[in-house]
Length: 323
Image (cartoon, rainbow, N blue to C red):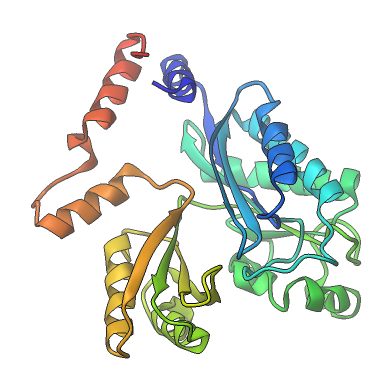
């Protein structure tokens, strides 16, 4: 069993609070920079790095780690120090929307921690990033202090290039913390939210306009699927485009429903699907719901997954995890 699984079981046995942090950085092409950011998170005691996803076309990396509340804030800050010093947004180009080197930092409650406590962590990190790194920081999602900033696309409106001007002129674009100017590291959005699933569906076509049309059809803000954000993007393959989605609440729109919606819309335009991908991690309950739907396994739940029951039993009994 991987070391991080043994660590998590040990913490569960001790009743330790666990918070997940999933910072997104505007770098997906330079291995040395990616490694430096990951190492910064790993350097914090009581933090387990669970996943790293980097994409050259998006020019973006997504890091997932868990730990105690204090440790996750420290790890997020250490990652931010590295990213701010190594990423120059004046030179950054990529498919994914972004406002800064440390584009977004969400805190997610895992166990023994409330959403309100994660909001407090977000505010703490935001203040520290503004004070010590001189970065403009916007609070979003559950941590937002302004209603319009609960929705991340509103915060990232016009991206880094547009925000460079807007932050100095438009009072509505003033940050919650930090200066009203953008330096080479840009700005950051820090927040607290429930689990979400980042999910992309690739289409066998070079028609980017079609991907954008389908994205508009499925995203919630355009009257599409509930709790879904979507955007059409190019990929590293010139013959493949992508519908990139955030599933904010898979109880409202399960993963399979999002996939089938894109599949149906693409098929209606004579285009096939070239596969799909999950970015980062997702809860076992999402996989269970997709499995139940795919094979009509009525009543199937995550508790029927062997590893789920094994870890649950070990955590409850205090038995050592198998290696």
